[in-house]
Image (cartoon, rainbow, N blue to C red; front, side, top):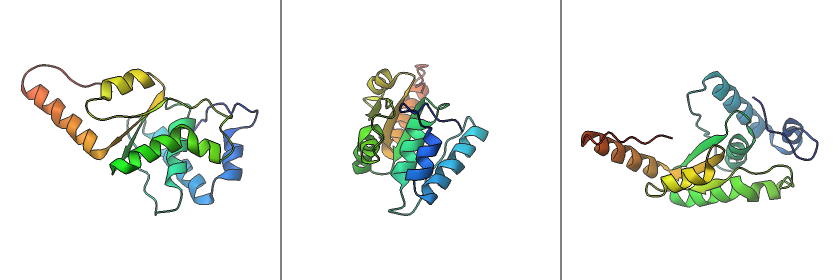
Length: 155
């Protein structure tokens, strides 16, 4: 797992070793190794409440060099906004690392807003949505294909 360049002369591994909790470091390592081994797959971060899932998700979404565009899916709408704020800026400010990286654009989207979100994040960014958004997109895509339109969504 390779991290992007730290803008203040350190390495992200050194920062993570000092500032992240042991369980967060382990979760980042396990998820990163899994993603590196299975490039065409996704990873689910499942940890108990209060153990630092947001830090792990933000680390994977913003700091991994080989994953420029990331999709983060949350089970509830209220978590989507929280994740967007934390991943894009708030977490990095709390950790004293806001000047250490140029955060990738982070955008919440709904089925109607997917194209605008893709334009905003382009090839390097973080898209955040709910499970329901993905289900609606899949349903819309299936309906389009059933109608013979030949249109397909490409992520």
